[in-house]
Image (cartoon, rainbow, N blue to C red; front, side):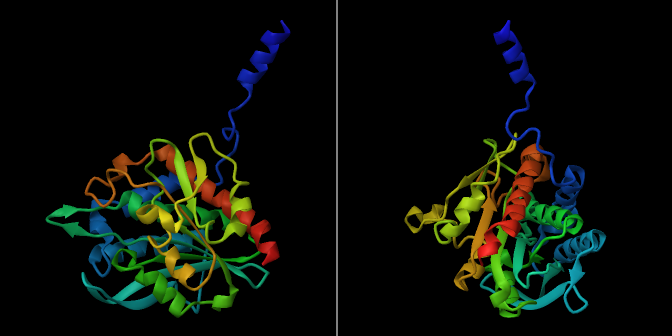
Length: 301
């Protein structure tokens, strides 16, 4: 009888992570990624009408959330010169939530993708409407739960053309570079059949590892650490997204993303192919880490 009672109690207990309430509005998260990955956005190639439409949507969401602009504007203009494309007026979108410490975390995700090729729209749902949706979810969380440190939310343009938006941001930062003590970059969070989200960066910044290890697994998503060692070759993600521009300036980073999948840089990277529950919990894991970082990691900086 005691064994039966014990088994009944265990069955009634939630699985690890399942009792954790999501620190975000899942419906809004999915709406954000769906809108940004719509055919009407034409693949969000820098300098195109689709890019401008994406900008307007992100700006609307910044205002709804209540982010503050720097110097009266969320827009940071810059010029793109690359082998593939020249853009006279590319646009980063940058807002912030003020803290009291005088130090800053930059949360980033690029909103551009590769546009239309051979008549096919590359919607870039995972790459990287998913990162922008998670960025907006994190902004909404910290607007309601003010951080100790200022958090800048940066939706970068020009990542697909050589990480140029992140470079422009750091060449003309809205705060002094010395104040930026951490970059949390998100690029591809919504497609993984194994429920695995990777955090890259601790090889270079080992002080981050204990804080990542505090992030509890969720029912449909678990956090793995890796993909950041030079000997891993193409599996070393250090240079593969906007966080590399921070790393070049010796600013610690954590890059959150999934491993490559069959839809990467393909026309099939559409909303219908994401894993919605995994995506919501992956975005929640990023927020979980930001909460820990704001309270723990930054005390020693």
